[in-house]
Amino acid sequence: MLCIDHAPCAVPRPFPPWPRLLPVLPVPAAAARALRAGAAAGGARGHGKGQRAPAMLRSLRPLQQLCPPRPCPVPCPVPCRRLSAPRGAAPVLPLRRRLAVAGAVAGAAAAGWLYLRQQKERQRRARRLRQLRALPLGQGSFELQDTTGRARRWDDFLGSWVLLYFGFTHCPDVCPEELQKLSRALELLERDAALPPVQPLFVTVDPERDDAAALARYLRDFHPRLLGLTGTAEQVRAAAAAFRVYVSAGPRDADGDYVVDHSVLTFLLDPDGAFRDCYGRSRTAEEVARSVRRHMDSYEPLPPEGRE
Image 1 (tube, rainbow, N blue to C red):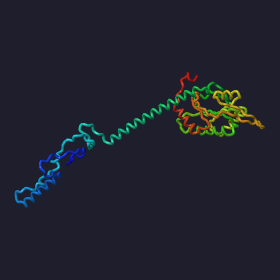
Image 2 (image 1 turned 180 degrees about the vertical axis):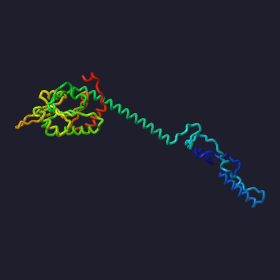
Image 3 (image 1 turned 90 degrees about the vertical axis):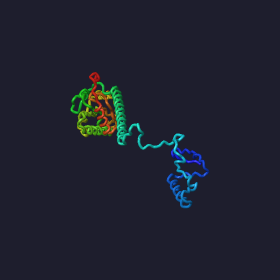
Image 4 (image 1 turned 135 degrees about the vertical axis):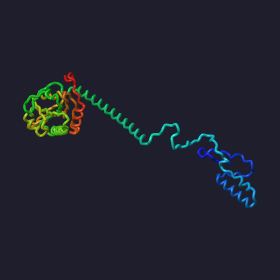
């Protein structure tokens, strides 16, 4: 016959040996006391005073006496749960403080990640700027005339940001679209008074038909500060070659009209006259304005020897 008195460990062990032949009934202590008291009272009524209760009832023993608690011979497989920290252990932080610490750690990690990302972006831009400045674009000096007949040299535009486009007034669709986009980008930049002004330039690749008067009439439909430049065939060819712009006049028709095939690019030049970026037909006015603003924010003047 087995009993279990240690519920967590559930280790069975036998009852202690019983010297009598009477059955041993493990019952709760209160029930055992009540049964023995009842048996004693009944015996007194039925058998006379001083007579003992029947042996069956006298053999009742509380469960604690039959199976006294003893140390468990094997370690408990399921540790007891403690509702409070053990003595000598470090105090547990409140939930609010633990959340604050976790938030601070997460914020520091996010700040570090953003810093590293910005550093990587700066390095990428610096590397690309070195590559762009190494390109032989805009180097050398050339001379053209504006719409008033005034001679203009490339050095006249040093100290200003410049957006430069090569085209011609008889262009059916590409040049008007690009000039409209250029005008829109300038309007977006002019909304920020803190930004330096940008000088837009339009250099013709068809000097035979685009004289100063023709340029003045053509450019009135675009931004008011858009400055047109023209010159002789040799001067225009030298300016286009300085920016590696492809120019090729097509065959003439019966009326003597022709189309000029040329590179469709808008060049961005910084105040040092260095090439910073270029924008093709796929770029929108908003993208051009954002790019120009980023270049302005990251601009650092070149040392004097860097301009030579």
